[in-house]
Length: 304
Image (cartoon, rainbow, N blue to C red):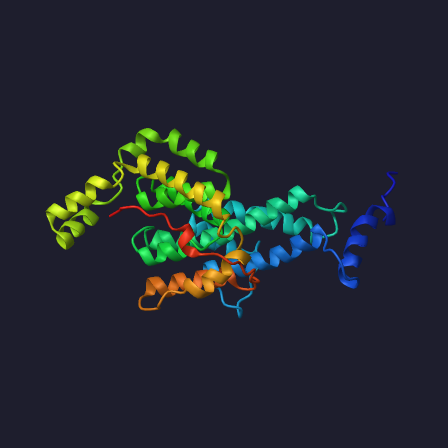
């Protein structure tokens, strides 16, 4: 007869030690508890994405979410949910006796930020990126790592959108490095050289506002194409960062600027919806106050 495996205290020693420490003693939180907390936060984000009120029952692995995700038909979203669901289940139940590694925790945090990124991806599927300069200005107050996620996805679906490209190269610079941004630009040199730095509609508005002669003078001074604009901008902004340091890298460092400069007047639905997403992302974030002159981070250029 096959011997039935018995419960062994030693199998659960590490896990119970972590759980008891988290519950009863003040100190560091284990990766297990962090993942459990992240799962709960992710379910709140999913409620935001799918507009599910607190009165309705839902879980990350429930049928309600599965049906809603299927309807969205977005692999970026579904992949993030899969990671959060898998690791959340593994570290909630007691079949797994080992603690999650730091790499596993990083994967869960990355998936959580994918959910936050999807809030903006979904918004810009409704309101095309670049159509409102005020939204673009406030969008730039997001941490560069999050902007990079959003813009990477948007670029794959709208590669000729000059506003996406403009913001994307700066997100690469601020999230990674000057070398990474210049490499991205050089790898796409041929396609970027085919793109004007302004739309036909913008040029027509400039001519109407300033007259043809003055407009042509403006046009002659601006970069010839998106390759030139992106390359020059990365060089200039990288120099500013070397001189003044980064303006912000995290939500905490950016919140001061968001609270003072980032709330749009709610004069149209586009602004109301964007304010709601930005506010949600900054909920619970502490403020790290920084002394800076915002003018030191503005790139001067002629662009229409």
